[in-house]
Image 1 (tube, one colour):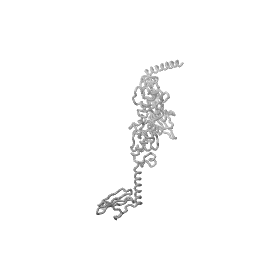
Image 2 (cartoon, rainbow, N blue to C red):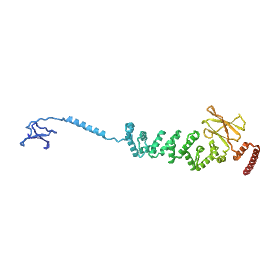
Image 3 (tube, one colour):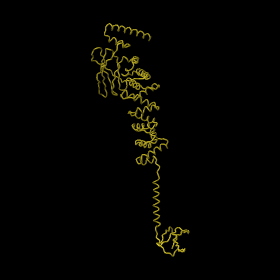
Image 4 (cartoon, rainbow, N blue to C red):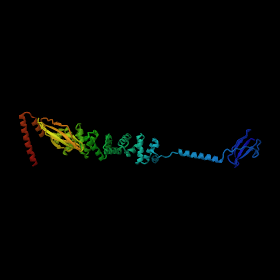
Length: 423
């Protein structure tokens, strides 16, 4: 034999294998396949040549193997397919089950696709990423528009957003509103300055200025120059200015130099407050001409800071010359502002004021230390007060009489002139 042929059902030769002394091997893939032997002389034989056949696969076993193989391919394909991640899937499965970079991409994509619409869960995920340092400009812009949480967190967000040049006006407004509502302001000056520069809501701006002014005047809290400048600028623009803001400005500049423009504003503040009988000891630090005009030049102002809701009484004794008096006059004081009490006296050159305060609250009384007040006088001061002091400090008897006579003539002339004007 030379070859063995495998003939298919349609007559085609599917295999042709050479026959050797060791035999030959062919594979039959269908029951209809037939074997044909070809001899060296070209003759062909079919059933007369014995051969050995061995069945390698049984159909049921083969189908089961194929089924398992196909199912395995299907499972692999399903696992390899990437599931499109959404915020709803993250909500169901939990944020902790996803990588930070995966969530970052999802949040940034969702924000852009939804045109920056607010979503509470999305805001939560974005801020969790922000706290871990995972954010981009899109996420910062979204959080600046919608995030509202602890004041310290919002301020941290505000600083980062400013570094990325993200618009933070709404965020600053929420920070200031929350701080004012809770009355816990800390390191907020920069936030307010930027908010004011971008156009502040008037009521919130006014509330902030009033609060800061009150803290400065009543609680001795430090105040930034920028706040003082804003108060003056708003007043010069014609905006209504609350009295406590005017007091804060006057207190601030009572120990500092000021510009010509500020000088005009300070004088107006003094005039408006004194017209309402509002005055504080630091008012006396201003220019002599202003004080004379406002009838404060000859005044001595004493101040007491009590507790809120307490009743404060002043005990005082005016001692003239070298006289010592143990009798004290009493007066119930009304607060000039909140818990600050101010009393006004006119002290002449030969007078001393001894005083102390007694404060009563919840049935308990507290007494301050006794204080002594003496006014320094200079000879030749103008006005009625100055003339009287000149008489009191004059040691030469004849000169004193001349000054008394001159004062009497001027007083009579003034009385006559003003009487005629009134008529």
